[in-house]
Length: 162
Image (tube, rainbow, N blue to C red; front, side):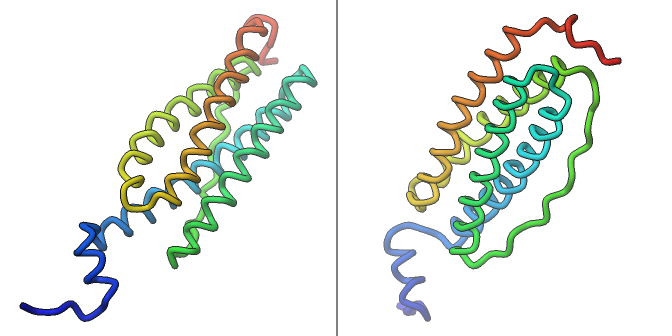
């Protein structure tokens, strides 16, 4: 029987964890880092065009939460010894404020579905990473509820694109 060169490899094998699991966790974290920062940027842009100050404040608060999520995820990426990915700028789709809110809600929903699946995959091997992703997911629930509330309180016809 050949002994592994490193004890960490031996323990990983003994516990049923693979080196591939670490790489998968890093890729999930890198993707979530990029998306959190892109969502924060998009929310800040949408807040600038929001005619209602209370909606603007909510969007800016949600954007700040997304930025904090990005920072928390960055810490985990660095702990795993991986570099932070570049965050490409997202294109501004334009449209009126109601359409911006709808786009924000759709992005939050898309992200939540994907994050839930990623959480399930990473939890067995990396519970501390899953804990951070779980907090992001839970905050996302609150954000979706707040954006839905803003959409329901606004009239798409009241926000002209002019």
